[in-house]
Length: 154
Image (tube, rainbow, N blue to C red; front, side, top):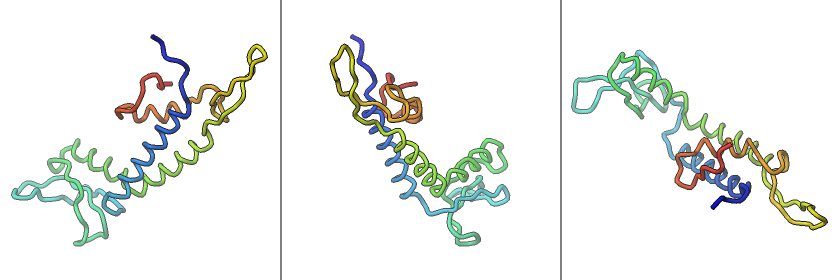
């Protein structure tokens, strides 16, 4: 049994819900700015081992370690810490706002389609028509979500 055409309104709603999730997670995270300094390490609790750390809040003694990524001076631990710090809540919220703006521009709308003199309503992207590579591409960023449908993949 083959499925019918992609319902862009479903894909659009899925994207909106995922952006809502990203927004909520970013707002619940420790306040930024998050930063990583290869010269500043975090001591693993109950151990004499030090780890690379990502810190939040004001610099100095008040800084809070929000993530330890592994052994000090380990290249992978250092790369992981830099990646985490780069994606702090402020950046995520800015990305969500920008994606929402683009998604709004691609919001599906009901249009009339004429075929064999018969008018049929259909939902299409106001920019791209029947297909919307942007909306489908944005949805694919969340393809690990249980509500994602493989048929949406661009």
